[in-house]
Length: 344
Image 1: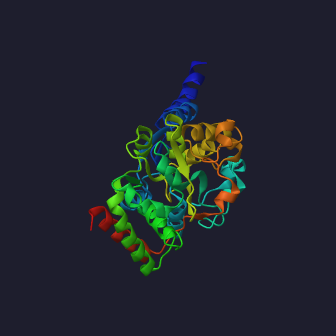
Image 2 (image 1 turned 90 degrees about the vertical axis):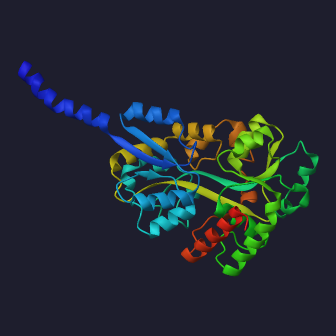
Image 3 (image 1 turned 30 degrees about the vertical axis):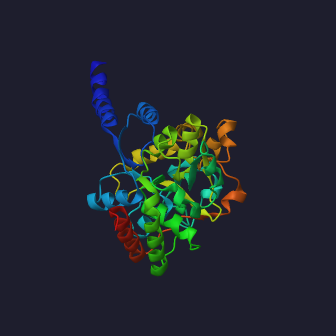
């Protein structure tokens, strides 16, 4: 009997040690994966999550390119970056047989232009980029268009997202151009128009914008709908505006890096995220709409039916989905963005 227990111990002990030593490296937007979700996954699986965060898609892309292979396992890029990374052979083709939870996704988000076969990405959270206003100032109730932000009455009052693609898309739309325009003349026109806007800009911020809206440190600016809804729960004067000229719709997706060092752990986490109860919990925490239809149906009515979080199809028809742009156009965006930030 002792000999049998000894033999069993030789097999069981390494397995338990292996389970404890399993890790998963995730690179994500701040606040997208709550601590309680990480804790629950680690408790259920024995897999430890190493979570790193980034402030925008471009910085994430540069970092991933720099560190190379065998670094991160899962990322959460926006739609246009999924397209770029897919075409550059940076992403692992997902084995759908290992992802039964895919059936919970909203079919609206399957087979998008940035991943036509839905083989490289799992839609996670999505949203709209628009305008926030604090209607404690009665005059702000008249803000309905991007072009209104250039009004001289907003001198040194605006908050802009610290995101070149978002701000250039907003400016291009205000000029009547496509949100994903690659025409150098149009991009230059957007730069010149943005330069005129700078006198109205108080601060660039993406990660602190919720607190800015809640505290009233700024009363108007560019924001994402989920952040605006979160702020409105604390400050009832904060409202979201879907600009009349149109707006950007973005989708953030889970992807697996090519040569990810912990693929099986990554599949376990993806299935965990695809569970309706987890999708619901993350959406409640972030206040962003989920691409998980089964999870969306579990949300309370005040969120599931809220027009800021889940705008109607009629409103969404004015939206422009983010798409990737050419390397030359991207370099031009970044050149002009640096000049804007430097005050040139």
